[in-house]
Image (cartoon, rainbow, N blue to C red):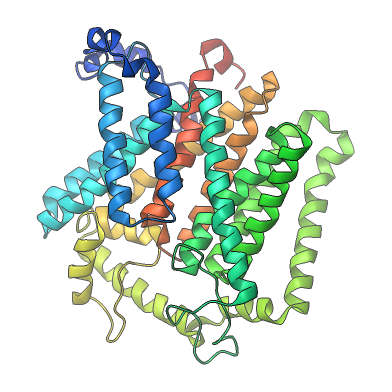
Length: 460
């Protein structure tokens, strides 16, 4: 049983053996001699950090086309530094599962009924994965890791502050985001610079998690006060989005963060608190939520609408889209219709219920099954499980060594759980403003894998 568990989670995978025998891997470092004479590549890490920062900074403010151009630049730069690498390329079990995920998407393009449209989606998907590969390599440096996270938190502070301002001063609602039959039909939902409250909520989940970790990691009272301010403003703005999926994601994030904090501090707690700290915290959290639902009418109405079934127009819309998407999976269960929204937009009308047009399946798991089939969905779930297991394993090493960089890992894992919980009922996850952040969180975990060696692996 333990052997099967270890193999499934790739916990004892010796990548050096595969690297030494791989013809493809021999391409790594093939341009090393050219790199030695290059002036710019003496600053390769700084250039990589700059490109990653440009993606992070521009995400909420620019068009998706410009984000695509920046991702293309990141992809090209990853190719350059990999072919001219002077050392280990940073391959991890997470990279292998990402490669499998990409390979299945590639096969799905070939079997797609609309291969040209699927190829367009595949190109975009590939750019995201290469952004992950670059970030995972560059952020092995603690200095660059802290730099990129700081940049993201400062940008998210601007985004969330503007969202909070919209709540107090009002803002034009760009679409019918509330049930028109509800008493909240005219309620303000903030969207800041992202143009959509659900999209803003998905973006802020990672900001909440990382700002909480910054309270611990950042040194000095001014920096800690700034981080605490970020926590308050980010959570407030996320609440003002009135995004039920975002609230669910925030709850999942908080629970995951608390569980990982319990894991981190377990050995430092007296026996009583080891047993009762989490139950007491969760009971207090439940009481706080119950009081909020009971006393704050807008919150109560939004929460109750989650359980209203088809009586809520948003719920009814999603249910009809989900049923149509399930029919699509039923017709092409193994490898799907091909990646990308363009294929979905052309095939979905053949399955949709009357008057329920949609641009996506409104669930990232269902969307994945539609696009690359149940095989692709299985690879995606395997990737998530391996990423979390490796992240907790690395976190155990950081706890053992007393390295507070482990709090960035806690935040990354919690943010990913929150984004997955949100994505269970929405597909803003596929938008570049969110998807780049998702792969950045995964890169934070993968970038720290280098800390483990065979002796350290024996800890677990």
